[in-house]
Image (cartoon, rainbow, N blue to C red; front, side, top):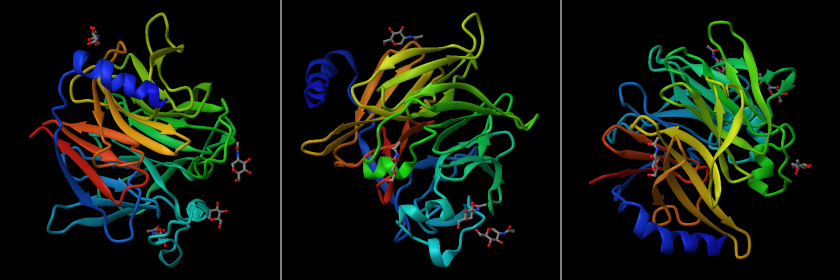
Length: 329
Ligand SMILES: *[C@@H]1O[C@H](CO)[C@@H](O)[C@H](O)[C@H]1NC(C)=O
Ligand SMILES: *[C@@H]1O[C@H](CO)[C@@H](O)[C@H](O)[C@H]1NC(C)=O
Ligand SMILES: *[C@@H]1O[C@H](CO)[C@@H](O)[C@H](O)[C@H]1NC(C)=O
Ligand SMILES: *[C@@H]1O[C@H](CO)[C@@H](O)[C@H](O)[C@H]1NC(C)=O
């Protein structure tokens, strides 16, 4: 893997891809004790970022003077005494861990996948999240990790990475990848949760294309991006879009129609190291840019790269104590 990554940066980068324009870095620190902003998003008024952190809290950033304020919890069981700023992974099923975000820009609802508790939504005023579903097709969710709203219909696409592995296995490294992950869809009109496709190896980070013809998702273990067709003669089938040199996590739409970002971590075992990257790519699998995060995220995994208008990249990471923002000047 190390050889492949050197090959990539030395042999390919300078010739094929533009110079990295996202060169300015700022960081927004989480409140003391908070860690792991796995999910990061701005709302429809470009306010935020909103983050979900390891102790089960969803926070909203209100600028440098106010900082982060409480927005919501995903768990109804949670007590502040037990859960606030906890880093004990075994409290996760009680305290919750908001793991993926997507706003419905029409209603303002924030859809949240909690890695332990299920799919829920938070209203614009915050408060407790409303649980929508914690199983599909009779199978309980085990490892929800990514979500995206179809802004035209309000349908919600999300992924359950596995039926046997949960996030604690990933954190401890104690797992054998399986192929029981599922791509799911919730319709707010019918209230139905549907299994679109299954049999994937740690799928994550689904995203619906702007033209609404397909959904992309990442297969973490197989190091590839998959395309699930929604329309046309390939409707309801899955094909490989792109192979990557590391493990892809969440995919998000870039501001340019037909373009996407995926967080990719090249994970080496001996010696143990992580090289965090962002790949910008298009709907036919062309790689447009590779962004290196190592300078600011040394040996830390990145989990989501989200670009907003004006060319600002918001970085979510399971291990950081801050939200990183890269901008073009
Ligand atoms: C919100 O959840 C907390 C626990 O997380 C609970 O104590 C409280 O009663 C809930 N509030 C409402 C209005 O349901
Ligand atoms: C509340 O926590 C208990 C474990 O203490 C768990 O069994 C139960 O599923 C939780 N309920 C909810 C609604 O999160
Ligand atoms: C996940 O971890 C638990 C506890 O460490 C272990 O018992 C279980 O076998 C692991 N699951 C898989 C699929 O590796
Ligand atoms: C995707 O990017 C590749 C490489 O830049 C390019 O050749 C291809 O035409 C692009 N596809 C679309 C649909 O823009």
